[in-house]
Length: 168
Ligand SMILES: Nc1ncnc2c1ncn2[C@@H]1O[C@H](COP(=O)(O)OP(=O)(O)OP(=O)(O)O)[C@@H](O)[C@H]1O
Ligand SMILES: [Mg+2]
Image (cartoon, rainbow, N blue to C red; front, side, top):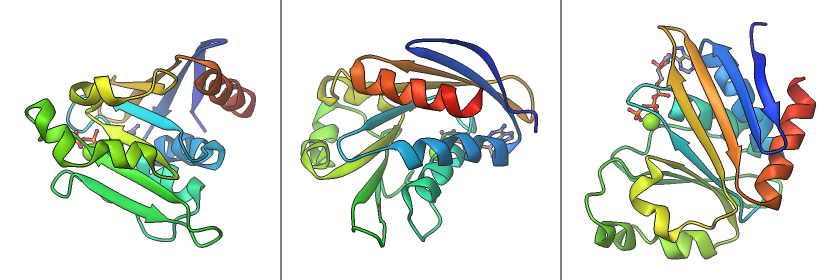
């Protein structure tokens, strides 16, 4: 297992992964911790591993279906059998203006009783709660990714503390 902590503080955690399955493991742990109203922003270039990470989140959340890229659908919903709660998986890559953000119904998604993971969240920044988890993914080489996880409030800081406890 090469997944390791590079750095951490109360609102920051840096984990490196070697291969998509390790990335999915971090996502899976986060998915177990997420609750409705939590928002996770994934930033990183094409092929960084945002969808791979979210596949793990889905597994941890308890969805039975395999998480696939919402690049064309824009929003995918995954409910879990135990309580029907939904994990929303958004991809804002194709949105051009803030009107597009309204068109996909982000307000309704954020008000719904589910957790939210967003790829390419930059254009939607004004809609998002301050207390959100920001995960920046950097491509180090073909199989290595660096995950820089930042919190911006009590809830996201708490999620970081729990991830830190788990992976250290
Ligand atoms: N450590 C790693 N973590 C995640 N993916 C990795 C890793 N190493 C290699 N990969 C490869 O990188 C690719 C990541 O693809 P993925 O669809 O998750 O990217 P993405 O960030 O969602 O891209 P896009 O912006 O196009 O949606 C996959 O082909 C995966 O096999
Ligand atoms: Mg993707």
